Amino acid sequence: MDSIISIKEMSRAEIESVLERASEIEGSGSELSEKVLALLFFEPSTRTRMSFDTAVKRLGGRSIDLGSVESSSVKKGETLADTVRVIEGYADAIVIRHPKEGSARLASEFVDVPVINAGDGTGQHPTQTLLDLYTMRQNSGLEDLTVGILGDLKYGRTVHSLALALTKFDVTMKFISPPQLRLPERVRFDLDNSDADFEETESLEGVIDELDVLYATRIQEERFPDESEYRKVSDSYQITPETLESAKDGLGLMHPLPRVDEITPEVDSMPQAKYFEQAHNGVEVRMAILDLVLGGD
Image (tube, rainbow, N blue to C red; front, side, top):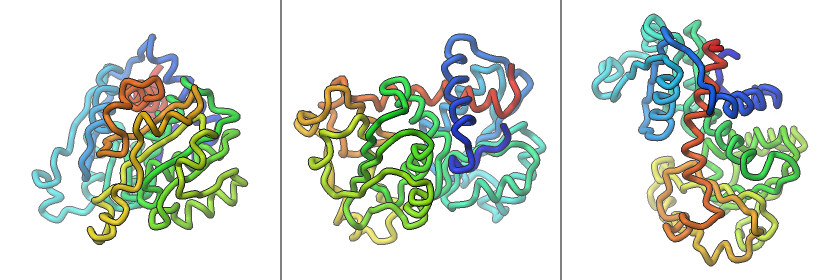
């Protein structure tokens, strides 16, 4: 396995190899001593940055971190191409998060070391999708499922990656959002081309009793060009214990986090809540990714 830029470019076999390795690696570990991972985060991150850092260290490797943009040469006007060319000399692989869609792919064109996309603007977030699939597989399996995906479907890169990944499995998708936040045409085009089984709706109440998994997302204020447009949709959905009363007994409620108020704290202790388990799975899945990318045992 080389760079990981888009989930669209990964086959079902490649996805399953990561999930299988994640299952194995929980107990056995691996060894990547002498390997150095560079963390280049041009946008804020808690879970992705820290789980990659933890993952490489648990594998015996080390990490170097660009730090804040303000304290790096980026602040002086250095281009992304020059930054990654320099970092390539220090590290065996590069993890990059950037506010501009396509940045991870651009970076990969200037270096010979593997590049792992940790989120590029409203584009993709493939490693989040792999841990999402891993969590689904643990709780429900990945076949014969109906998955509801709720919230910011327009700007949500986790949604875009997950939707494309689920086309590789026997899954029906229900996309739930206000009209202003529907899936982008490019994602809908890819779903149509994959003969995906999906529908779009505004009503969670209308479909919740059909769902095996409900994947909720935050409506991302920072992605809106106009704050007034954000205010129109910011409180479109809120999942409470009452919301889940009509759900199937085995429903798994997932969320890539952070949340704002789309899931109330009262839900956290309910058996449906899987989002903290999902976040914890990030370490094992990213250990598996690094092990496969950097050629560990």
